[in-house]
Image (cartoon, rainbow, N blue to C red; front, side, top):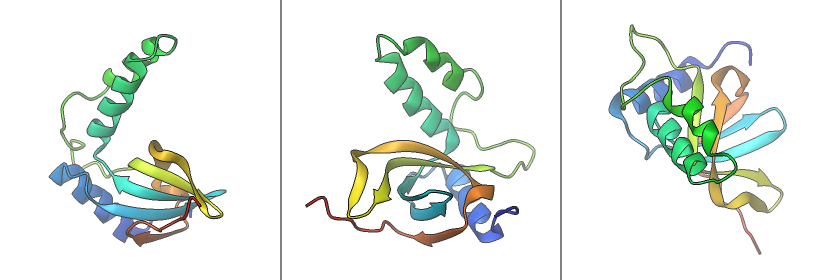
Length: 125
């Protein structure tokens, strides 16, 4: 999708402005179906930085996620989001969700070709 769906962008704006991480969404992007909950970008970056800081080998990468954007403020100047930030998310592959515990994914809004509200169920049997 070369131009992001305006309705999906509006959802991303609300996630950012309300600082909510409770909106469940499923998106189709090239090569994957991702299902999970959206998080504001600042919250997502903070969590990724925490995970990296806890890693002996990757700790120095945490600075990338903390350098640009402190706090939980939405984009300034009326800037519209360009990405969705998923947490507790899974890539759906057949009957499985990968990873089992959920992951952190950043998806360009322009890459989303289809979407629906809510998580798509899967079976790990």
